[in-house]
View (cartoon, rainbow, N blue to C red):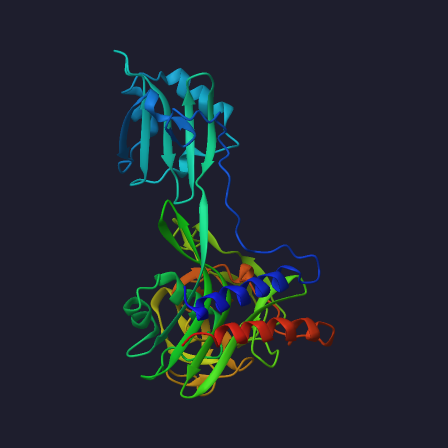
Length: 413
């Protein structure tokens, strides 16, 4: 290991110690190894999979077919319908079998006699969690969590075309590009990056069975855009961790809590709502605010208007791109605000339109949509870390963490 690498580790250990001893009795976010919840007496001569002595059974693996059911698989391997029903009843609070996803893998542990009966079925729900269906000594379902390991890594890159391409060319996990784009979303225009812009980041990479799950905690980052350096220093204030620049200012700007005043919520975000006009059940990826026609509608944050048109069922609609991560939509307007057109820039609080009932609408209201990386999210549940600067009471602690963080970022190119 080089002297530089040793110095990096020493500084990092100091950094972790300081970070883990933040005030407010906040526990460290550094993931620890997740223990298996299926217990098994470890026998040296046995080979275990998912906590089961696999060398005692014949293993059959496969994946859930579209519109397939576990019962079809189990019935073919000697498990009775009564055993299946009782297992589901015994463990209805552990796992809802309706959440089984087609394409996911499963493994059967079958007896080695002529019956070939399945004694266990392991369903791999996601990269970290499996569910063990037991038909041996008891009838139940038990979660089994794979062991997660982590490594502290540092990376840097120079923009040739985009942040994504720089990450891919450097052999970095795609999730790291997403993490950085969210951290710097308010301070770096990722749509306007120039060749030669560069970044540095110290982060934790998570692994299961040697396979990367992607980026975990970000310990510090730096973005150099057109010669202007922006630091991202993680710091816990008011019980929540967010990122600040070297001067202690939050890297995030606030959104307004709602796009209009003097209104009430008449319909919430839902994946299955009966449409009041079409009379069919379909998703409603927004929040409806009931208000009189002509009520001003305000932009909840700074941004660029990407459309201001009549969108059929959505009626007159304005969509604003706030940064590389967040966008908002305002539907069923009666008319647009002055100067509101595609390409125009708006400030937080600007009037972008007025409440109406255009499109498919039963009455005057605003259908407000919120998008994160192009996907709709519930506007009422958008995570909003504090945007205030580091307080006077926390400045001394922040300065210590900043000093270590910037020193660490300065140890590599």
